[in-house]
Image 1: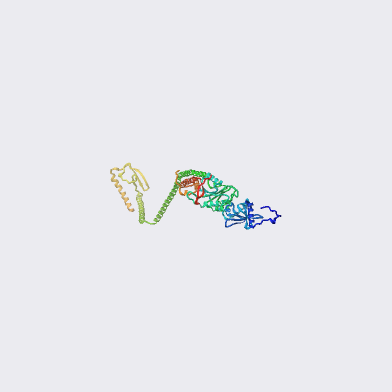
Image 2: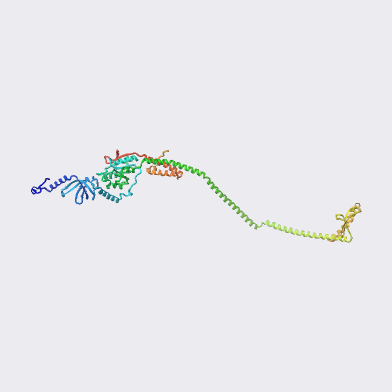
Length: 481
Length: 83
């Protein structure tokens, strides 16, 4: 446009434009002057048209600027625009002649400032938390030793190398890498579809479905890691049936995938450490246990050996017990025997007692017979004694009678001559020197014969002399009885 | 020790299951609280578990592959050279 003097010749020399001409001129002027601008503003009135184009308004306190993002560009944006988000949009200005308006055609968009981004992150986190995507109950246990580890990451980044190195050191495994972008255009979509892809994989010959997934990316700015905050990545992670370790950024970097994954690793290296144990340690552990098995069973066998030995020593114990039992048994048997004997004795005594009452007829006969005999004997004895007594009396009486008879003869002056023994003598028996006894009625004297006839007519004289005395006696006796 | 073939119930055990069972078997045996028959059975099982664990640890071969698509759009794994 040329410089035009405002005061002179203004009315006369003004060129005349049609509206279209002016609009076209304006369009050219704007597009030339603002072919590449960065503008900061808050997104409002965001609409995604059916055509796939995205319309929005950027605003600040005093002004608004319409914006459009063509379909092909929308999918390549590194962030997901939303109302209220403060962004820095990069693009060119253009005019829309039909509406007498101008707008920015957005080619790239980034979140303006850490604070705004973190606010967005926090809002999104709350929303997904409320949906339950981060619930502890959703967490799956990791396999202790995974057979195949699927890794979602850039095949050219540091993360995959860190992971492979650490795996090699600890426990070499089969690794299946699903290559993706990890930042920038399409990164979130690729990551999400890689996670889905691993889950849909069917083990087929050499191709094995992983039993553990690591989603990894090295360190970077909040914006660099933004793909891992995207909803579709978080949702794919939460939906995965294969356990997932997230390892995005370094140490303190936290992205939303970390809340949805089954395990968060602070770095890709740490993810490898979580994924597999140290093989050498396990080998040692298993070897140690194997080594402990033999001494353990050996000790056990020794123990049983000693036990058996001990039991052998203890065998007298049961014998002693048996002995005690035998003794008890004996005791019982003895007592039983005693009881039996006692019982028999008692029975015998009882029988005896009872039988005493019973009289054997034979014995009774004997008894009665005995009694009869005794009575007879007694009777016999008493009769004898009576007879004896009477005989004695008779004897006495006869003696008295006898005495009395020859006494009276003596008293009448006769004397009785006897030998020394008191026997009557005859003259033939007397010779000189014969000693004789003479009984007078009042006493006896002894004499010696001076002359006797003796032996000459011994037998005749004695007989004569004696005869009368005997006759006298006989007569006396007879008279007395 | 003569190598017995590992029975299926052990083959199906994961490494940590086998190791944990082995651990408890060794512990029990060392405590000496088993019956003789049980102890011998436990010892035999322990030996097999150890073999199983070792076999699991032997399967430690690194192999890195990359997911890619063949001409027909089928997902395949091809060896990856990442160093």
